[in-house]
Image 1 (cartoon, rainbow over the protein chains, first blue to last red):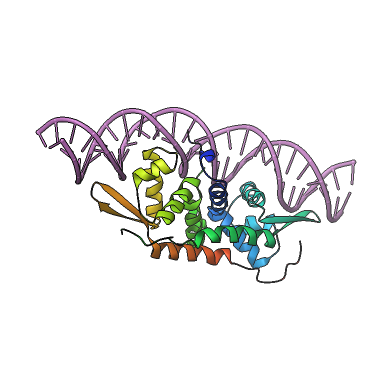
Image 2 (image 1 turned 45 degrees about the horizontal axis):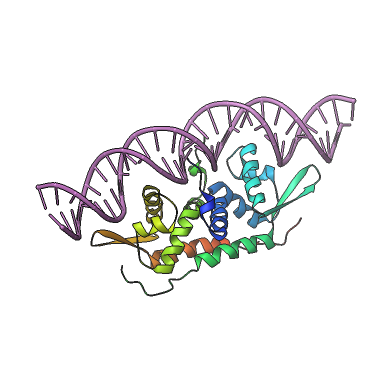
Amino acid sequence: MGTTKSEIYTLEQNKLANIAKVLGHPARVAILQHLFKVNACVCGDLVNEIGLSQATISQHLKELKNLGLLKGNIEGTSICYCIDIKNWKNVSTYLQVFLNQKPTNLGECC
Amino acid sequence: MGTTKSEIYTLEQNKLANIAKVLGHPARVAILQHLFKVNACVCGDLVNEIGLSQATISQHLKELKNLGLLKGNIEGTSICYCIDIKNWKNVSTYLQVFLNQKPTNLGECC
DNA sequence: TTTATTAATTGCAATATTACGATGAATACA
DNA sequence: TGTATTCATCGTAATATTGCAATTAATAAA
């Protein structure tokens, strides 16, 4: 129990849900917004920018990276995170196809 | 601990995350897709369509309804659920503004 | 009225997520 | 070689979510 039964859904449904899930936390939304704004960032900046501990920020960065939304370059002693624009577009477009869905026929009720 | 510190984020960040969170479960994605397809549905149909118990489906419907994505009409003994198209467009557009974000300046790294 | 059907609600168990402190690894600088 | 800095990882605690069985509420049909 408590486990999502991923196997009963289509690949598309799981993919869409997975993308939305990663975006479904305000810290990660805030991180993305900040990265879009400055377009270059180290983790330390984020800790100051957002009010969470370094460990927690690092966890959120990991989830964003897993989805492919970030890329990081080593830059001296610290790591520089940026949006992976190409991948962001892919992921964003995938979700937007779902969001732009329209009913296929006229509603019979409501 | 384990609690999201909503108070440190902007209203927009919380709103965006909240929308994404609701969409962040394959069962809810599946429910929406099905409702879009048939454009009229009772809960019983969904239980057969998706492989979850009636109680669980009901919970997911509740969350979709909370976000305003669904509206339900009483139809005899059963309830007819439909997408609330107007609200769907609002919510969808709100999220898409975020998804269509572009970097504000040229990247200095990566 | 009684019975059947349908969906919401409640209560529970299990898993997932969130957040942080402590620790570890890697690099920069003295 | 130390020492400081920066970020990742681990372990822990608390809350949230998921899913179901059982129950409840409401209506339809007999």
